[in-house]
Every structure is written in structure tokens, then in C-alpha cells.
Image 1: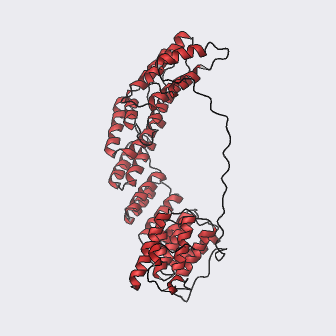
Image 2 (image 1 turned 90 degrees about the vertical axis):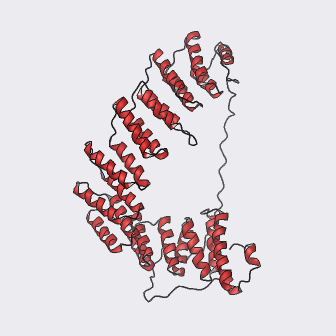
Image 3 (image 1 turned 180 degrees about the horizontal axis):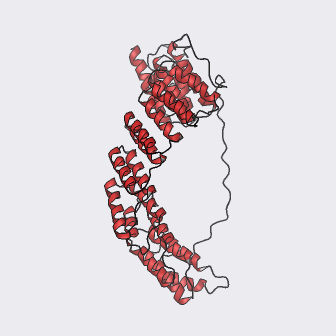
Length: 459
């Protein structure tokens, strides 16, 4: 039990409010008796996990080069290579790059090794140079093209793998990825990208650029490199526009996909249905489902789960239950996502006890509930003021060391405080902070707001 915050110590709150109420739930005639095992067990003690000691490693050897200057590197290299056991040339190149050498100096350093020490660069050499050129700050892609030219001089023509390494390295910086430079490199490279590099770049583009810019790049690749988008490309584009609710563009892309000879699969249709679910467009979900069947595409379990989720979210529970029967007739057993979607719909319609009965059916069929399932039930039971039942589900979450999400916590603490169950509210507060479900400051704000409501109501 947590301590009373300062704002409550001086407040005029009656002492009975600080006691855990026995019950404030309605007592329906058909009260469900099912709860998972160990639901009435006391709150387990928090296990203190001891962090394993980090393994001890040998001290890292000092770098071979202390300065990024090319002249210093050449003189140091001449001394090192005169030793009885000189370091490998690729190790020297990597060390020089790590010392902060510019891409141009690193290329010159490799040329010095080749001309003065009969070194023959191999694939590893050029991978080091390419990675260094891509990861070094630069305003253009000239250092990368310079490495490509060096590869040709030593009879190592750039291949799709070299281009793929360069593109992925340019996009690897999470803070400031050089996506525009990656696009320029694909268009100016002496070698064409393979489908994996091309679709990787498309996937990165749709995350950071508007769809018009992505379509422009696709047209440039088509005109300059004669590379057509494939089924994976269209799937990436459709998924991207559906996530932002641009279903008109998704429909256009679906038409283009069919015109180019590709047959949409279940994943494509499922993606579009999820887009309609985001917009609460249940009729659109059913329209896509019917079109999917007309095109001869067999629905999978994701299809049925998406349909049940959309119907349940719209409050169309009879249709959702009917789809559950269709799902079983098609050979797919309901999973955790199926039951959770149905429970969510039932709770939205105020049938929280029916959702609780469904939990019993779910476990009898050996389907394991997850955190989302329990969060859904706690929020639904709490809003319906079945607080004893909600506390039982809460205890199950505690026993299984699960976490409570913020919407569920805020809603649950609010209804507990308004029902006068301040002690239970503090217990939930302790749980979410100890389990690290929420930051303690964030959790306290939700509790404090609810307590202020109690104070205001009693004033």
C-alpha cells in the first residue's frame, strides 16, 4: 500500500473512504462464478532479480593510428609492415577509417598499400571503404562513386551486393538517415539494384516521405533503369497508405496491381481491411471481404480476426458472432486475438459479464489470454461498475506478472475512487509502479486526479 500523497494529508476526507469497501457492484441474479485459477491468491512478493555480472574481457588494444592524417598513416604503415609479424592490410585500413580519416584519404591509403606494398584489395577491403564512405558526413554521393571506380581498377566490378550494402548503410542512421542520397545512388550507380534493395528503399521512403515523392521515385527508376515494381512493392505501398487512412490511394494501387498482371493475395486484402477498421468503416471492411471472395482469394485467420475486430468495434455483435461461426466452418479455430476482439465489442455494448463468461470459454478451449485480454476485461468491468469482478481479474494479472496499460489504469483507478474504494486504488497504483507498467509520475497524476474528484464531491 502506498503512502498518502501530501495533497491528501490535509484534505478533509472521511476516514471510511480510506477503508477498502466490501463491494459496490450490482448483484445480478446470474452472477458468473468463473475466474482463472489462483485468482484469489494473495499478491506475490516482488522478486528481486539480481543482475548477472558482466563478463570480463581483455583490454582493448590501442589503435594502430592516432591521427586521421594521411601522411602520418603512411609513415606508421611503413614501420608496421617492416615488422616480423605485420598486421593484415585490411586491419590497417579499418583502423585508419576508425581514426577519422576522410573517405578520400581512405581511398588514397588503399592506393598506397597497393602501389608500395603489393597489396591486392579484396571484397572485404571494398566493403570497409563503402561502409566508411556511407557513414561519414558528406553532402553528396561522390565518395561512394569513387569507391566504385576503385573497384573497377582492381577488377572487382560493383555488384548488387555492393549497392545493397551502400544503400542500407546510408539509411542506417536512425536520427538523420540519408534516404535522398540512397535514392540518388540507386539512379547513378553503375549496377542495377536487385529486388531486395529496391523494396528495402521503398519501405524506408514510405516511412519518411509523402506518397507523391515515393511514386515519383518509382517512375524515375522505371524510366532510367527499366525496373518495374513487383507484388512486394505494391504491398508495401498499400500497407503504408492504409496506415494513414488513405484508402482512396489504396484502392487506386490495388487497381494498378491487377492491371500489371499481379493477383492480390490475402495479405493485401487484409491490409486494406485493417485500414477500413482504423476509420471505423465497417461497411468498407465487408465490401473488401466480399471482393476478396469474388476474386477467388481464400480468407485466412488474419482475415477473420480483422472482420471480427471491425464488426465488434462497430458494435455489430450479432454479425461478429456469425463471422466466428463462418471462421470455424472454414477450418480456423479462434485464437487470443479473436476472443479479445469479441470481448472488446461486448464491453463497448455494456455486456461486460458476457465478456467475462467468454474468458471462461476461451480458457476451456486451451486459448491463453494475454495482457490485452485482461486489460480489456478490467476496463469493461470497471466501467460497468462490476468492481469485485474487475479486482479478481486484476489479481490474475498480478499473479501472472503482466502489465496494465495507461487507459485501463486511468479508467480503473477513476471508478475505484468514485466508488469509495480508495485502498484498492492505491493498491493498483503500487502495482503499476512496481511492475513498471507506467512511470511513477504518470501513474500518480492519474491517481491524484481521481482523488481530487473525491475531495471536490465531498466538499
